[in-house]
Length: 368
Image (cartoon, rainbow, N blue to C red; front, side, top):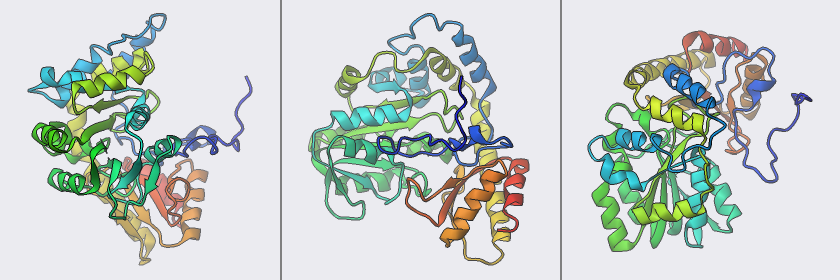
């Protein structure tokens, strides 16, 4: 087989939206990937073992009904009401597949991101590909399809559930569609369910009944459980009939057997999440403190809630930000540039990692 050269363009930028997370495989001195917002604890061991065991069944098709993984996830999302909600839940090949399913199935018209002007770009890519009119997130115009990443990746902004409900009612047309991406919302803490739209049944039903606004909630499970290569996502639909319609246009067996086995096991790993909620804010605070020392009085700014798995840092200078990206890659610890994709050339996104790994990054930046 011919090896891929390190300078080969991984993304076909004419047809694909640029994402990070590709540099590590081309680095001979790779240490850790700071460019992806995965959990600093790494992948849960029990779930990895379950996925490995499932590889032995690869001569069989995965279950077409996505069971028992789907029911296990439903019980994790709605511990006391999962049986009445599981028919509104659908698994997908990462959040990206589900994003495209919703955008393609929604009525034609305008599309708007919100309420922040920078967020995960796959939503806009899908909207543009499907011929929608793109509205400015800062404008007052209501759209018939709105996508909200909350917490917002990369900016780290977050709206509480009450703030989110108000924003939806003020920015979405009647008969519209709302997609709420809660992929990073689990990091809020043990009480995350209370502030999740998945548990706002009364609001969802009322909004659908009175204004015919359909609200979907998407999760990418690849960040909280550090399994981006497996591709695991889910969507909670406003009604069972909405879920049926998405199934009609979803390709069969889009989630493979190892991914389903991983999910079925990982939702039982309570200790992993408890340690995530404990250690991530500590490591994040240490990272910011050390960045402030490194900046040496320069007016760098750091964005995002204290519990999140990354820091969105504005270095205030394009040349400095570009140099930071170069030095990090050279040291085997790539970070995410804010320039491609996000169009924020003075920013870098830095994942929260263990101190000894962070030492390598900050040592590379000591002369920045």
